Length: 169
Image 1 (cartoon, rainbow, N blue to C red):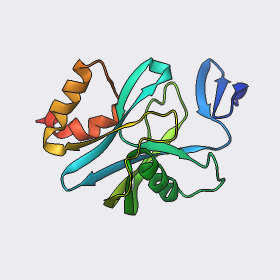
Image 2 (image 1 turned 60 degrees about the horizontal axis):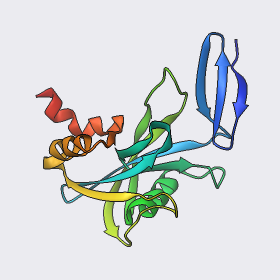
Image 3 (image 1 turned 45 degrees about the horizontal axis):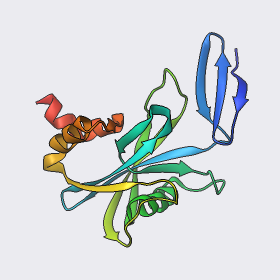
């Protein structure tokens, strides 16, 4: 059976395929997640997320092709990193394509690595996004995440890649 769209907004479509109900991105929009490490520090963002009703600690990320059809992932990632964090990368390398919650959403994201960062502004995103930028030493990431969790901040699953070595050993 093929999926049927039961509702579609500007960015999201709700679909049904047999017994499965799931969300997908509308209009072929993609997403880029940016791993930006500079001198042993990782650049993180914190922002309010309506679906969970609280602030969330995340890697910088953004939509690909939401404004310009056919936009390259690397171009979108560089634009989003600068907009959200104020850091401009000299290079962006694609790591791979991943799915974060394949039982509920069809969306995946392209993980990129931003290299040779230069701070060009304070960041903070577009008006109304209220993004807080954090520069955190990789050696202290577990403590930083624990402190944010204790404050009631949600933690995005993609931060597991930064916590992974400590969890395995």
